[in-house]
Each structure stands twice: as structure tokens, then as C-alpha cells.
Length: 112
Image 1 (cartoon, one colour):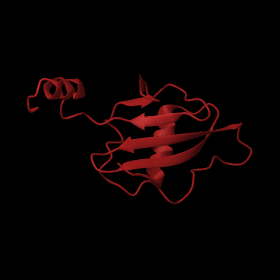
Image 2 (image 1 turned 90 degrees about the horizontal axis):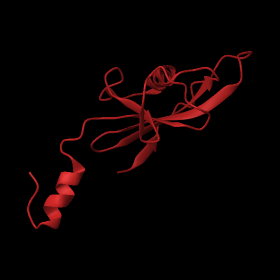
Image 3 (image 1 turned 90 degrees about the vertical axis):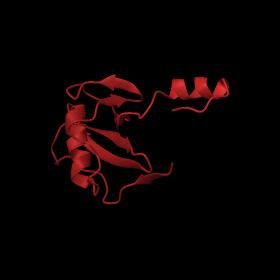
Image 4 (image 1 turned 45 degrees about the vertical axis):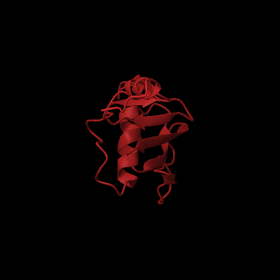
């Protein structure tokens, strides 16, 4: 899967605002990975980071409002505050459990 940074630059916080934090919002679709760098006020939440990324996005396939979210693979609430440098991820449902696929392959069976 190829990652692609979306052009247009980060969504920048207004001048005179409190200190900033830089985060990366990511979504991995079935064929392509999307990455949006965002600059946020220090007190911004995951939900606000996602909203900033959405303003940059050019894709309609991302489930902005319904996808579960997390930071570096750990599920989080949209009300949580990310730290500077965090990778905020929007998760899509998996078609099947990857552990089930590996188990079937190790037993010489074809996964469903």
C-alpha cells in the first residue's frame, strides 16, 4: 500500500493562539493510504484534528463522522487530546479477522 501526503499544506492555527502541536491524521483505505499533516492549538482534541484534516481532504470515501479513531493503533475517544507528534488514525472495519486468515493458511486451508 502506498502512502500519499495530500497537497495543500497543514491547516494552520491563527496567529496569537496558544502554543501549537503538529499531528498527522491517517486513513488507510483498501487500496490507498491518506495522510494529512495538521497544526493545532495545544488544547485541541482528536475530533478537532480530524476536522482540520477533513478541510484538506479531496476524498469522499473517508468515513469522517463514523469511523472509530485511535493514536498509534490504540483506540481513543474523539474528545481525547493528542500530543505533539501523534499519528491520529481513522479505522475502517476489516472484512475478516486477520488472525483467522493466518490460522487457516497455516492449516493448509483456504480462508473464507
